[in-house]
Length: 474
Image 1: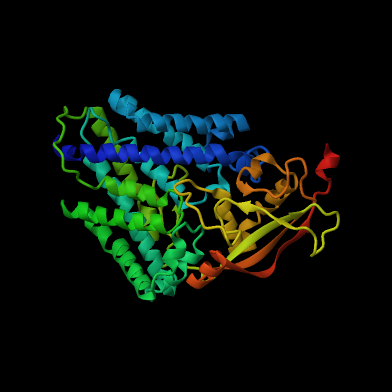
Image 2: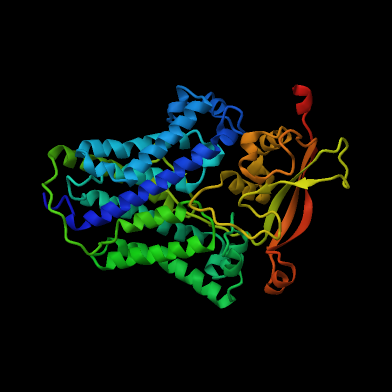
């Protein structure tokens, strides 16, 4: 049926699928390399403890039936293998039904991880990857032209991502309406990148232009996605350009990249459409049924989006099939960082030899320039930013982090850039202080070589030790 497919989008589908597979690979690598310290049997928020109090119906996951660190590792690395296969285009060389199954596998694998990920997986891009990944199952392969229904639903996701983010800003912090939020945002965002210092020091009028352009891209341009070509391609291209600007200005995991992937599905690349036979009846029925189901599930996200009490980044079903999105409804005016230190002294005093732990991504040493990590996601570093906003954000896991630092836990130390203590000599005490960080000025950078200036604010956690020292446990 001619109305069912869009042959001109076969190259758009190809680019979209390969790019999405890359995002999947990054997500599974992040899980495989970080889970032991975060979610493992001896992690800060162990999966076994979580599944003992949350039902399978609430959070569908294979780990309700079995969990071990080795099994979780195998599960994550399996996701990496399938992602690499999809990047290589294996799905294009198998029958249609097999290609669909191949795309279903990473979605099911990642769903099991996200649904037991707790605080570490509470970010909007986790649900976004699952929602987009589920639709990718029904996009087809070289045996059929791309279904119009699926292409439309991909644009529907992109619309909700951008328009929802725009609405939450206009309804939230007044600085968005006053065009002044970027006076602060580049400095106070969760994890600044190597160019964030320079973005922060752009002239104030340019910051106001940035905000105005952001409002236009998020509140006006998304509507154009549903217009005829080439307007829809122009709208998607503008979104891609805006997302690349955000990629340069900070570390936002794979949020910007998967948004770019979504926008690519709306771009009509100049090419000659490949001639393929009509889609089989069973495929048409499945796609239309799934499409109707996703439209029905869109009720709650749309209701939330138009509500004055709009919330950000929430899933309305345990399979994360249709979600609501949004980012930075409010902007911090000042940056506060939790600095963790340890000492080997038997009695902790202010003049003890306190040594600072260094994180990979979050600000620490004022002289260390911020690094680029996105699309890779440093989960602990992001949560440390929330801890700086309020101790309540860290209540469930910060004590576990301190305990593992006192033990010199190998898996936890791998999440850090550097531990100040040798592996066989853990600290006797660990403490945490809260500091105010601000970007230095051009003059301060030239004179001191420091990218940050920090000022002590208050104690975050007093010196703490293990009830039984590690040496006595051995």
